[in-house]
Length: 267
Image (cartoon, rainbow, N blue to C red; front, top):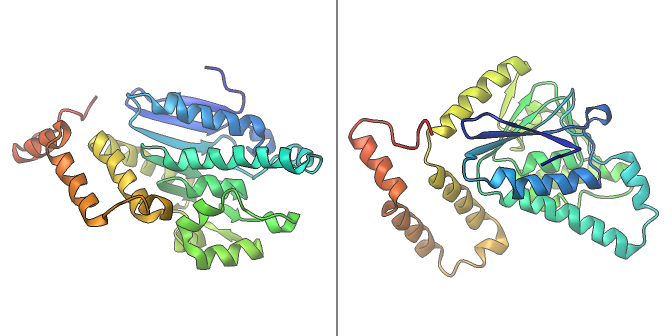
């Protein structure tokens, strides 16, 4: 399938890399990129042979937020047209947040506005030390509304309130301190070496177990999902019981006891 704003690379071992591919404008969002990100996570990333996804940006910057031309058009739209536009954007973030497989973010240069939104929906985030982050929307007279639920879930209300109202620019060390990212690297060379090790580790984990583990965290922490759980204690007990009688856990535990690799490794 052809994409204009993103580029795909399949490792052949189960890792799909999705790269934002508008480097000439710092990988800024527009309607096309929003639509294509939603499409690739519904299609190629969801294929059974994909075990994990790496999300990154081509060029020197991960994502500089909204495309200026896209933002310029928004002020010419009526409320109903703007609502359709913002719902499409929010639904794209929700889709990526709910993506069942491990999602690794590789961040360099800058992540601004919606770029921070993309960082917030990644399960594991690696960043180069000099990367600049900012939720800069209030400088334009708007707010980080569409990414708000995902950023707040990642860094908590206290940090979200401070950063939403201040539009503060901060570096990777602070991003790690507040929980937005997980690892900071002095250089992209160091980051890439760690990424190779990380993806290899993911390939050695049970594919179904990783998916259930991610769903478990979302179910236990997102209010609307937690509200749907009739009994939290029963839910977690049933989750583990169901896994134990499944083929993957049976193979994984047996392989561990027999001191061999489970059959999913190497596939």
